[in-house]
Length: 309
Image (tube, rainbow, N blue to C red; front, side):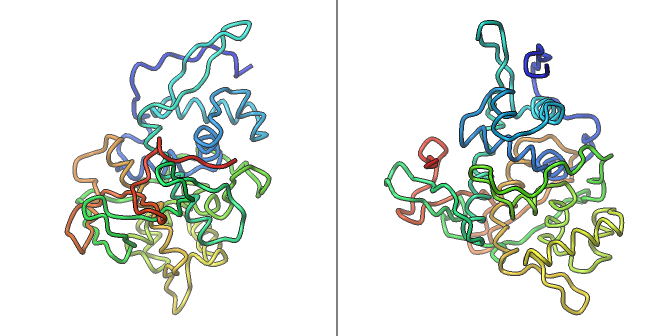
């Protein structure tokens, strides 16, 4: 059984060979652009699930799919394994510091889903003020609220997503479901596979035409047509005069993109010159995204918030 096998010891996270030449953001998209990965992480944060059986029972995921995702998350240094006794020796998966840094990305996803859909979601409580925290994106330097329109992006000479099209790693195994606690279906549709996530990233970097996306990503025309159609249906893109432009709903997803970029460029090794420099125009500082509480204006820290489940 995958849940009781002795995991291979991981002394330090290593970047898999297949992603080593990608930019840090390309690697981040490859790692996190998968619905099962996001749901596994969501459960680790929301319900403190740590065991193979816990995720299997909570998500109804097949053992083979779960085993492959956990193996990847360990390989990328997001989880580490630890032995414990329950009649016999078993293993649990604990978030590393690298994994714990993803909490703000998950909160940003929750926040966007709450703001732009009508689905009931578990409230996020800011322990410092005791009130529900409607998290909003702010600049870590000047602490002013910000949007995508407040930023300027400069690419390094090798900052391209053209190689994000890695050999197919996963099938689209997750059908639309709404019975997961705290499940964010619209967000998962946007982030739920590597091509969707990459198309959105290219849009934030200025791609508007079909040819722009294709040149940026090296994506097959049929796949690109499908993703663009789905984004128009979701109200993330608006098609006009042959141009795909981000709607207000799509621009608001910059909150999620900002934390993905920040995490990837901080945590993942990448070739020199492949970085993106995102600047907050009003203060001129490099982007260091933070989440603030609408109730008290305080910074939302991982140990100072909790969901009511």
